[in-house]
Image 1 (cartoon, rainbow, N blue to C red):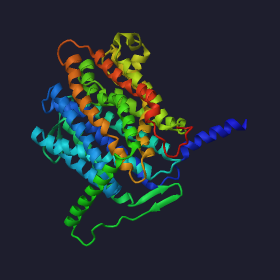
Image 2 (spheres, rainbow, N blue to C red; image 1 turned 120 degrees about the vertical axis):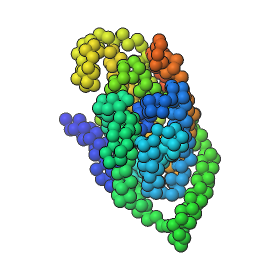
Image 3 (cartoon, helix red, strand yellow; image 1 turned 180 degrees about the vertical axis):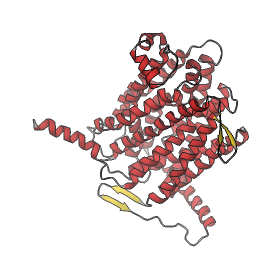
Image 4 (spheres, rainbow, N blue to C red; image 1 turned 90 degrees about the vertical axis):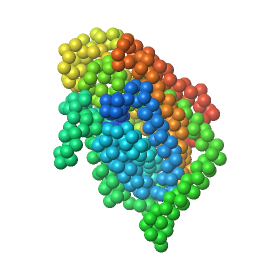
Length: 498
């Protein structure tokens, strides 16, 4: 009888492995929540609707702007990764949050494309680009090898707490103001649209992170398996004025960036790593389309005012909050590579719930399940439940199960195989395959909507999702077929686990 108890205790210990983590790791978790709330309010569901409603773009043009923005964000991420390694985590955080605050403030109070695109949306891409490699590098730096898998799972859970909050907020604001309503900002005398109001909330959620990072994060902290090491950062040019020192620091950082960037291409591991990430693009495309294609699809198929923020964003996020740590515990002894194969196969299959005729789900929509989803949870007023609500809910549940396995490990993989001191560079350059993917997905979004789900005329929306689902299957199939050529040994795992 003692063996099951010991096994249960060992399983429980996987969840308790972070109880002795340094405060910096918990600060990263908290700041990730706020950062994702702000990102979710501006850069996902709201972005495409804001471009169409407030700036007057059509489907194709809005898709082009989204593609350009998301591609620029990826390009900036690639460029700043080695800069992060050179200037340090704390400085990179402060610069990133500062840029995001300025950019979101510009977008909230202007409707001129000549202002909000170059001085709002483009700088926001730079600010967001600093966040991903910095936070992922920080998770590895502030966790031991034994804590790493659970730390990345909790990190991913916190990200989804942020998405749950933003999704719920998006629906509440749209419900309160109307799809095309207005909000008078107290004291400022500004009359903001519904989508500008959401962007303003993103601006407000960004501000606390500046103070948390400035006062809470210690410079030079690094966690090793032997203990905590603190190496205080010294000014690189202590005898110069602030402006000259900033210029010289940027110059030195650029030199370091070029040196680190060039050295990566001499590593055979890096090419295999890029092949892995290129294959992972297939399943990642689903998320891009849920950001940029699904909101417009949802309003056209379900009607304006439909709770599109909750039916995918909130449900997915809440499920991931609970599933990601569980998946992390279940797969902590399994390599990231194997886990990505398993999870991506489940996620790719989920899209086909939306690729079949919605009438297949009509019996469920007419029963207790449809009533639970549409009336009790989403608050839909129509007596008859649209079967798409059931199809989207099924898709989201299955998608989330797969995502809980593959997505956190996709963050862990570059950190696990990167040489010491190059974590930021590996994480940043892991975005290279997404550079093309985001350009492709953003542009394709507009064309798919125009061809299969137009604002007026006949629609064939199932074909839209069938195309996306087929593209997603490239990931698990490719990773299985090419495993012997591209899998890389992961730090902290033996060959058997890999």
